[in-house]
Image (cartoon, rainbow, N blue to C red; front, side, top):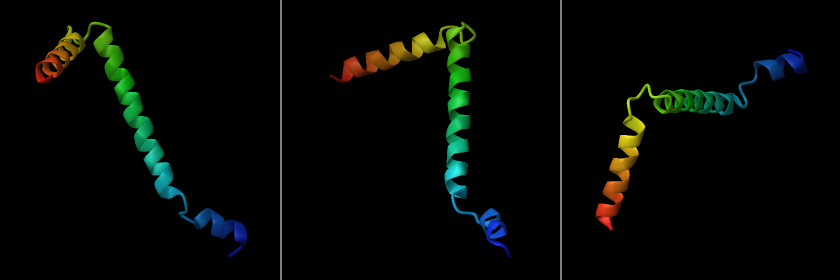
Length: 61
């Protein structure tokens, strides 16, 4: 095999690429979900969620 063929057949860095793609997909889904919630499609779910979190935190301290 030539050196180029060996480099192309190598799986070095494959895990890093897969990790990057998973992070990229998760980020895209989070952006889509946030835009949907902020546009009113969530019916105030985001506001209600933050309100509950704040009340829970204030209740703990």
